[in-house]
Image (tube, rainbow, N blue to C red; front, top):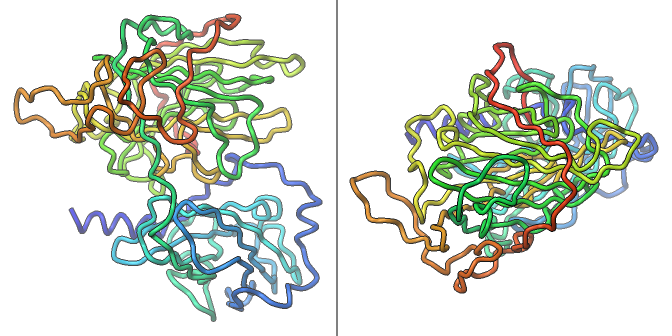
Amino acid sequence: MRRTIVIAAVIMMAACVDKNAGQHQKQIDPGYVAANLLAAPPERLSNTVNADLDGKIVYLGNLVDGDTLVPGQKVTIKHYWKVEEAPGSEWRVFSHLRGEGKNPDFANVDATDMRTGHPPADWKKGEIIQDEQQFTLKSDWHSPTATLIVGLYPKGKHGVGDRMKIKSGPQLDGAVIAVKFNVDLSKGPPQPGTIKLRKAAGPITVDGKDNDSGWRGAVASGEFPTAEGSPDPSGKTVARMTYDDTALYLFISSDDTDVASQYKNQDDSLWKEDTVELFIDADGNRHGYVELQVNPNNAHFDTWWPNTRAQPDDKTYTAPMTSAVNMRGTLDNRDDTDQGWDVEIAIPWAAVKGKDEAMNVRLPPQPGDQWRMNVVRVDKGKDASIAAASWNKITYQDFHALDRMLTVVFADANGGTTPPPMVDAGVPSATLPDGGAGAGGPGGNDKNAPAIDAGMAIRPAHPTRPQGPIRATPVVPKPSGPAAPPP
């Protein structure tokens, strides 16, 4: 088992997923690109490197404030590249963060505006490129150091041996060492938010509305925070969640002045336009999780990630979920002003294990069981920009961030989290004493439940909204052809 984990970590570190190509791309102002093509680099750099990449590119160095980071801290760094020879259209720029040890911390922090607006395919001989990057050190970073490595890799090839050769300069894993940060592990934000998920108070009919008795006492988000580095969505997003013996239920309400999506079929690329995404890591081990999406057309996307996003997903997985959409406006009419859209989703327990039948979870969950989940709303504006917001805050670079997921603690209808007596050996579960981290749902009477952290505040059910057309779609068999990788 230990050997398998180490091998998986090495594979993940060697991978450089080309997730920026056509996915969640921002529109970059040409004026921004022009302002970052320099006649000369700054006279003084925080870190002078002068690494030679195959005689074509020189990584001159960078400007950064300080050499110590704190988990959860946002970092701004300016990289400086000199083009000795145009690299060609196949090359992409990558940035990775590496920790220490046999199974080190790792983060893919590739995205920058210059890499989108002026990629290596456009680089010309003699250019000096100022490449400003922002990233946030993961809140669960454990290593005392974080080494930022950069380099170029060819599209479609992600191995260390495929990277542009480093002829001179400090290097690690075939990449240039840009800067090595110390990490102050004594500081940083609390771990991702914890919510207490009460069992439904009554039956729920999936019709795009949250007015069934089963929604009374459901845990509710505050307004979804915008992803770090993302433009703001066109309106707020709020969600509610509950469960019963047959399924997990989610209701998401998104205010949106322009609801639109061209995608109407099972496993279309829903994430490229308006949609909601749900990630479920039921055993909480950050290896093997389900991704589910529903868009305003009530089209579904589902996939199973056997390891992490650095490895391929299993496109043969189909989740037997049902959903219904309530439009508050006119779908796909770009000339009017909409109010938004709501979606209600039921996910049978059979879906949460993905394709890992041996996953160590009890189904249905019992009070005290803990899972990891997150909910993301994607909003494509009329200007084609993509915005994202989520129940527990993520970064714009990584919607899948397993370290940013909510901790979901299952409770009974009264908010109690004491596990029931074990009938047989079963599967042990973590417990949370009543009154532990989390909160009761709106209208609940759990006086011991403290408030959950920022962005997780309980809200009352929204007032009755004008109800538009309801779209309810049965499960559709997965097509046999290949699908594009999700975000």
